[in-house]
Image (spheres, rainbow, N blue to C red):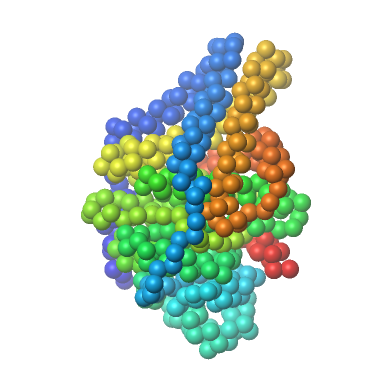
Length: 478
């Protein structure tokens, strides 16, 4: 039987109601591809530094984005904690998405129960788990297993509910949970994400302060296991997360924020229901949803806002090994391409304000940006292998200048992030300096490899939760 949520989604989904390909969108996406092809040709016919035009374009583009973020984050240097609004405050339910998460489920629930402002409902949305989740919940919370589609309640923790569902994917599980979460605000929290003690209080306050706020992301810090590989991946991903969240703040200033983190995100329940919930066919259901919220707000003149809330903090399990990392980035980038394609009519469209004329054109170029980066690197190796040293020195000079720019931005963004997040970062200037030197030749290339693999995911449409090992969260509990 079709639910009202599914009916609304069927009407509003750009996936199901394919929008036309506009001239602006075709020009921007096609232009990015043509530029890539043109610059690759330069490597075949040029003998001077322009043989590395693809690398120059890659560096110039990234530097322009850093300049934009630097300008738009200037207000963060005076950031201070927001005052907490007086009561009454909106009711809040946490939808805890879980699939075979027996190892971390209890720790995550306990972190939610110990919040300074605990949620009215903690709903474990169990997407067809086949592990020992039932026994874990029985032992920890005295919860008896209910039939599929029915909700069990804990006698030890009355706010804790357990909704069992047949395996159908995260989006379907969250949509089913919406029917049972009768609160004004819903938080989606992954089972491998541990919230700071005041995270829900901060998120609840943000929605209370701003009635137009319909979606918000908290700040996340990655946690990997204690292996050498895990420590390296956590090191690089920590600074990557910092830059990403500072960038989100910048785009928030022009009402162009598209990316929130479904691992810890808040939504006004009425708005979420009004646009039809999460898309079960999307590889990145949180990212796709934000596009639909923006689209609905413009179409119906709602003035909805999307925010990043610096006072709401959490720690999330992150891949600490190469294969897991590449698979994650494949899904992320494949989902990005998928969403960009479904919302192609928004790209370059002034009807959507600066989201349409600034953010989405940037995203059009981002579809090929990882390929620019990989080709630039392989051209450099090729020039070295073929003895074209006359090119190497100017290329290295350009790269050195970029490293200096990146290092300056890195220190700047970390200083801003510490103020914004309440010092949610490890200390150590040497660590920052070393990461800036090594990253362009290591972690950045791995990100580009994963993103290029994402093109395969996009073209094949493969999407699955897969088998996930939560070694980072487990290591943090030891």
